Length: 172
Image (tube, rainbow, N blue to C red; front, side, top):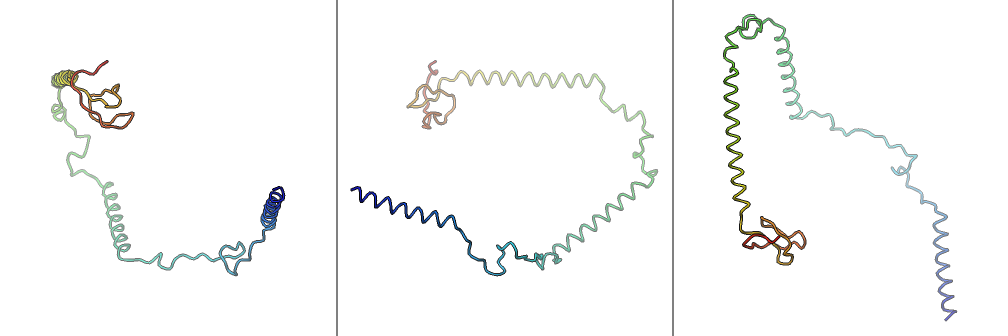
């Protein structure tokens, strides 16, 4: 028995020594000439030949952009021209008639009151609806976990089963 164990140990130690010797003396195989993995080989990098070719789409876009650029330059040059013939563009000729069209403080106060009354009415309607919803005489619970109570259908947060509807108020 001890011979068999010693034989196994010696074979294992021999194999382990072979692996260690193989790992310790690693000589990489030579790379083929011109391989891109070889750090001494310089591979010239040239762009693809069709990179700067102008196709129909590129030419159409360039044409559109040049028209847009010329339109922008024309508009810019027009801004520097005088606008004396265009009434309403000059702010110096503003008259008091324009200010009379603006709402006065009384109209603003009346409008604020109307909006406030509408908001109060909406708030009361929402409170009434909430009271009706709260006075439900049913709830949803889980068959396996009766301690789960909710007012909406769904899944049990503990086991994932579908909640069932029960009549009456939920126990506290």
